[in-house]
Image 1 (tube, one colour):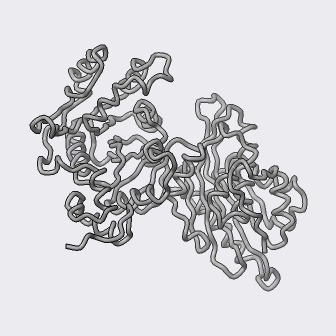
Image 2: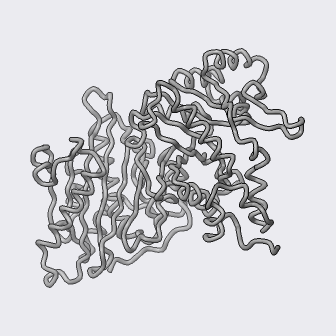
Image 3: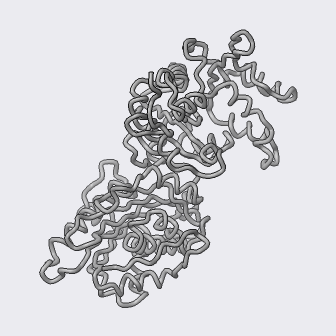
Length: 484
């Protein structure tokens, strides 16, 4: 079978093969055999394998069902009449792989590992108002007697010429196939190889999902994190089941309510914040609760707060949020205006941010806007040009006789006070009036310290069942409870 090269320790040490070299290595392996089916941009990936030579040993069939009528007849009609979707891609992979098993006699090909590669792509339009995007994936075996695995990716195209986009799709497809066979057992190395021979500005990969018997140990949430860490995208979303979700589909024409935090771990305060914020947001006449998406956001900067990316710490947070049935956004948007811009890519409907008084203070801090020529004024222009409401959860000042701090208590430089007053007057910054007074002394950092030290009572600060998850899976450094 296919021999694996030694895994390199860093991106700097990697030996990068050309696209032609990768295609040729696959073609020269007599045990890899399968089909290519491509819709939209043309037969860009299979062209790389034909050009490389020795393609007859790899390609059983290549096709492009470019006309919609032909595509529908082969793969079925999509309910939403869209063709560049995950649903269409999965139908293509399933149909083409089933044909391989049906048409190829195992007695004739006892050592072959079969694969089906497919993509469905929309490249830049003639007027260049739409840059394009696509789905591609591979269903493949690692040994002839083993069930198949699948790797699916979604990408957004950023180049301004259709020809260049098509070439990029071909390189990406080749990298996907090569990586599936060469690095399926090392997903981080696989991810690094996806951008081989591709300018990182040319394409954005914002979703990847691994599945199958050889990939069952791959945590797709961690792969989402790697996409951001590697600079492939600035934001990823995963759902309660731990599966990665396509932002464009989840957020399209939706009301979006987001809350940023460390969630290390999620406490009763976090739950009260999102509940009160949600009730306030959805009581707005302009908001339809049935078309509202709630996101718990963790920034990459937050995950790097200790200097290095602690993957286990990230997975611990993700495990808790998923157990609570929440949808999680991981972003590289330390500045709120970038987050709001991101939401604006998908929806023009009303958006909401839930934050504490301390977060509101940070929002008005100049240090976050030094990269903007217009400084804080430009940032606020970008934030509040959108239909956005900021809902501020109160903070209890235990050092000041338990005073309840509200939006006007945020520490804001005097020259920015008029901006805050203007936004408050126009109901763009609102106080969450009602809150649970019994949980005001709960702080995540203190709860975390108790969990790690095995001190008693930490479970009373957490939502129901979360303590059981932490104990069962030994999250956040939990080992055992202190003896009574």
